Length: 234
Image 1 (tube, rainbow, N blue to C red):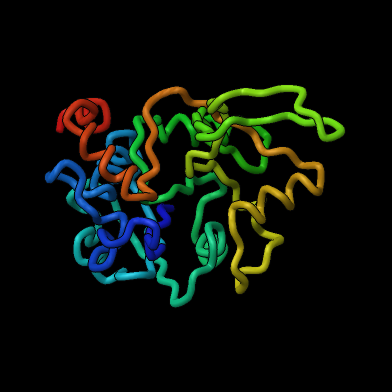
Image 2: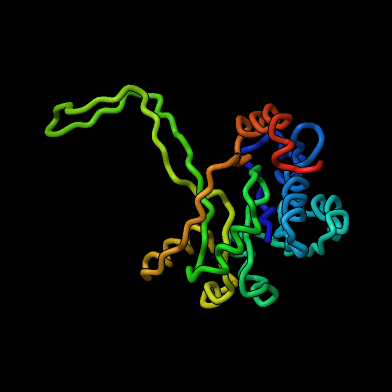
C-alpha cells in the first residue's frame, strides 16, 4: 500500500497544482513512477494507492497499473486519516503480511526483502531505518548548577530514523477502529506501551525523503548520478 494522499504543504509551491508523488524528478520521471517501477522490478504485482489531495490526477496518471505489469487499486479519503488510517479502512482486503510505504521517497532499498524479513519474523511491525545526520548550527552547552561544564561548537548528531517503509501484518491492526485517524506514531507508541516491540530493518544505502524544497532540489541535482541505482535498466 502506497500512501499518496497528503497535501505536500512543506513542498509548496511545487505542490500547488500537483500532488507530491507526481512532482517530476530529473525532468524525466515522477517520484511515484520511480517507486512503482522499483516495486515491479522486485516482484510486487498488486498495489493499493491511498489518495486524497488531487487524487484524480494520480488516478489519471497511474491508471490500472498495467504499464508496470501490476494491478493497482485505489483507496480514497475525503479527510486526512494519518499514516495507518487508510490501511485500517481496507484491512479486510489485504493479505496477512504486506508493505506500507510513503509515496514521496527516493531510495534503493529492496522492498521485497523488507517484506520477506517481516514475514519471517514474529514482530507485529517492521520499520526500515537509516542513519540521518542532523547538524546543530549553534554552540551546545551542558550546564550544572548554573555552570558550563561542557561545550561543543556546532555538533553533528546521528539518529536512526524511519524511512517511511513498514512491514505490517493484518493481525497487528485488527483491534484498532477503522473510523478514526490513526498514525504511524500512534501505532508505535501503543505497541511500546503494551510491551510489544517492533522490529528494525537497518539500511545504509541511498534514501531521501522529498519533504521540503531543499530535499526536492537535492533529488534533482543528484538524479543523473543515482538513476542507474534507483531504476536498473531504465
